[in-house]
Length: 118
Image (cartoon, rainbow, N blue to C red; front, side):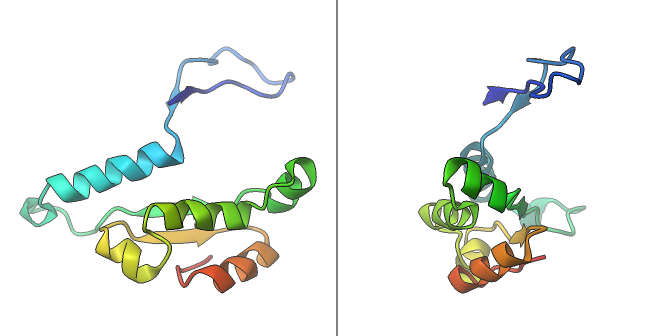
């Protein structure tokens, strides 16, 4: 986990280091641990299965500033964790929806995966 800090000088940094932010890998590992170690059917009040709602943030900016294809990077991460398709993510008990405000990014992701996109 990393400590959250304010990246903009014009905003207050009073809360720097106060919150811990888990990495995407830590979140997926935790969800896999929960689904493999706890019987969700025994939770009487549970009516839905928690999942991941992942946003591909600023794909054009990451591409031009750092040369990183965020769409491909997300797919590679999901593939590494066996979550890159509806079938595999459902089998692992982690439903996934991918969001982006970049239509191009969503179109590109649709060529890599059948996961739902918003």
